[in-house]
Image (cartoon, rainbow over all chains, first blue to last red; front, side, top):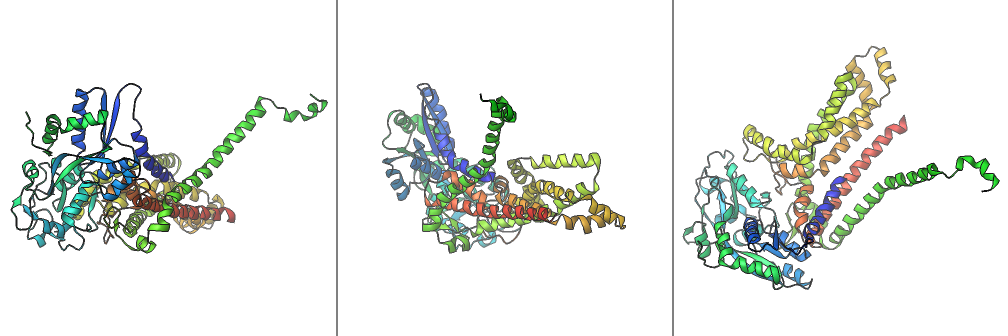
Length: 290
Length: 305
C-alpha cells in the first residue's frame, strides 16, 4: 500500500521542487532543469554565474531532456535544457498555456558511441549501429561484425541505452535507429551510468554525450555511407564533419527577460562558451578562450 | 441543577467525561482514516488513468504486446513485458523465500527455545527493517559481480539478481506471519500427538502444519504482494530492460520500476502519464486482490476454531 503513496509523491515531486522560487530576500532563483547531457555544464555555468551576479541563484536539476520539457509544459521551470529539439506536440502543449517557448543553441555535442577498451572494433557505420540497435536489425553477436571480443564469452552484444525521456535517446533514435529501438536494451538513467556499464562489461556497446567519455571506454569513429570514418571530438562536432553531431539547447518560457535574459546572454558570451568548451562540448560559435 | 442529577452520578460531565468522548472521536478518526485514504488513493489513480483505458489504449495491445515505447513517434503501450518482468522476479523470489521462511518459522515456533527463539525473532524483525534501497545497492554492487563471475554472463543484473534480493526482502515478513500462524495452533494438538508417541518432526509435519495451513498460505500471499509492489530494489537489480525473458539471467523491467523511472518526467495529463497511471491501477488491483485473498484465508481459520 505504501508504494502508492510513493507514486503520489513522485507525481507531486516536480511541483514541490520548483516552487522554491523566491526566498525572503531580493535574491532571484532561476529554475533550470532537463538534459542529462547538459547537466554538468549547466551546473558549471550556475556556479560561475553565482560569482558574477550574487543576487541570482540558478537551481540546476538533471533527469533528461523530456523531464525539462515536461517541466516547461507543467510551468515549473524558467529554462529547460534539451539535447533534442522540442517536438511539435510539445510546443503546442506549451503554447496552450499561453507561453511561447524560445530556443537557444548553447553548444554542439558529438554523440559518442562507446565500447569496452578490449573490443577490437574501432569503427562503426551508421548502418551497422542500426542493425545493432534498431528493431528488425540482425546484429545480435559480435562475431556477426567480424570480431571476437576478449572477455565476452557469450559473444552477445549487450545493448546499453537510455530511459525513454532522454534527449540523447530520442536523438539516437532519429539519427541512427530511424524507427524504433529493439526491445531488451538496458535502459540507464543517466549518461554516466551508460559509460560505467560499458566500461565494466566487455560485451557492451553504449552511447552518450562526448563529455561523459572516460578512459575506461573506447570511442570508435563513425562512418556515414561511403564517407571517411570520423572520430568524435569538439573539432569534428563544430565543423560538422562528425555525422552524429547535434545542437545542445536551452528553452525559455517566452522571450527571456530580466535575470533569465542576463543569464542566457552570459552563457552565449565568450566566458560562458569557454565553460562548455572546457566541459568537453563544442561551443555554439567560434570563441577564443584564455 | 435538578434533583435528578444525584441519581445520575455515573454521567457526571466532568473533565474525564469530555476527555473520554474526545479520545473516542480521535481514535475513531484514526480508525477510519485508513478507509478514507485507500478510497482517496483509488479514486486518484483511477481518475488519472481511466481516460487512457477508455479512449486511447487498445487493451489487446496493453496485455498482449511486449513493446513499451511511450515516447516513440508511434507510441506503443504494451505492458506484457513489464507484467512478465514483475511476475518472473516475484516468482523466483517466492521460490527462494518460501522454503527459507517456512523453515525458519517452523524452527522458531517448534524447535527453538528460550533465548534462542527470542534472539532469532529480534534478528529476523531487524532484517525486515533494512531499507529497500540498501537491498538494491547490495544487488548492484555485491550480487552483480558475483553472478558475472559464477555464471560467466555478460551482465549480472536480471531476474536472478532481483529475485534473490526480493526473496531475501520478503522472507522476514513471511517468517514472522508464518511463525504467528504456527503458534496459533493450540498446544493441545501437540500434546495429543506426543501422547500417541509421535516424534517432534511427526508432530510438526502431521499436526501443526496442517493446522496452520491457512495462516501459512496467508503468509505466502502477503510475501507475493510484497514482491509485486517492491520498487527500488527491483529497479536497481533487474537491469531495467523491456523484454520477454527467456532465462534467469535476462534483464527485465518491472511494472513498479517503470512507474518510478518515468512518472516524474512526463507532462501531467499526457498519454504517457496516463499510461503510467494505468500500470498503477493494474498494480493496485493485483496487490489488493492478493491481500484480500490473504485476509479471507486467515478469516477462514478463525471461523473454524
